[in-house]
Image 1 (cartoon, rainbow, N blue to C red):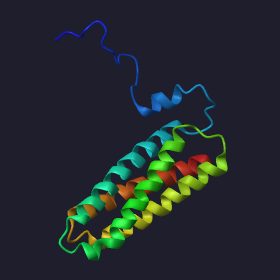
Image 2 (cartoon, rainbow, N blue to C red; image 1 turned 180 degrees about the vertical axis):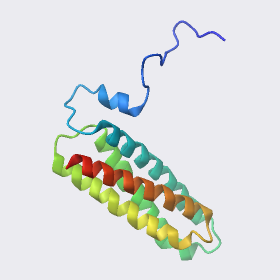
Image 3 (cartoon, helix red, strand yellow; image 1 turned 180 degrees about the horizontal axis):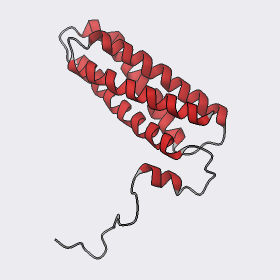
Image 4 (cartoon, helix red, strand yellow; image 1 turned 135 degrees about the horizontal axis):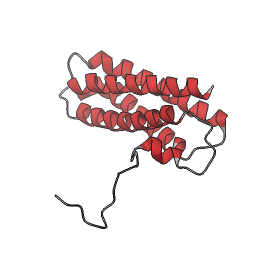
Length: 146
């Protein structure tokens, strides 16, 4: 199989988020692998929370899942906003810390709520796992920012 002459090549390039962040012309005063991991998991958390909320809406006992749906949607919004700001490499360390702390709180609350329903709903179990991973990645990033 041959590659078209004008096709992009990944040879010699990481092609991952760490590479994109590293090649940013701004200052590099943050642990780039920790930043990239957090941003990637923030995106995964957004998708998992939105999918969980949507799945909850289709459950027969949807009224019992109202808190879960709201928590899912709040977590998704907080994580999406934080990821969007983090990839812009803001220069205000206080703002970055506040956003990451908000993600830790949102992910923890969402995971706790989803864990309450994990025995009955696989989507809640899976969402809780993603939220816990994201929470850990945000804690790691916060420690790297200190």
